Amino acid sequence: MREFFLRIVYTMCIVIVWMLLNASIGIMLQWGFIYDRVSVGNIIFYLWLIASLLFSIWKIWNIWKEPLDLS
Image (cartoon, rainbow, N blue to C red; front, side, top):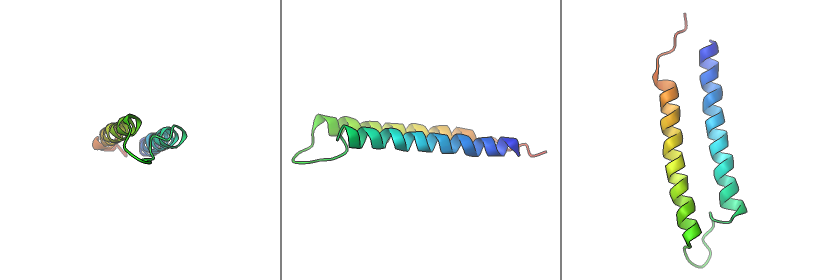
C-alpha cells in the first residue's frame, strides 16, 4: 500500500509543480497573454509549456508503468 500512495503523492507533486511553475511564468511575466501581436516571449512560453507538459506526462507514465507489488 505504501508504494501505491507514494506513486499518488509523486504524481500529485509533479502536476502541482508543473501547474504552479507555468501559471507563474505565464501570468507574472505576462508571456501567457497575447495582446496586439505574438511576441518572442509568447513563443518561448508556449514552447516551454508544451515541452514541460510532455516531460511531465513521460515522468508520470514511468512512475505508473511498473506493476504494483501489493503483497
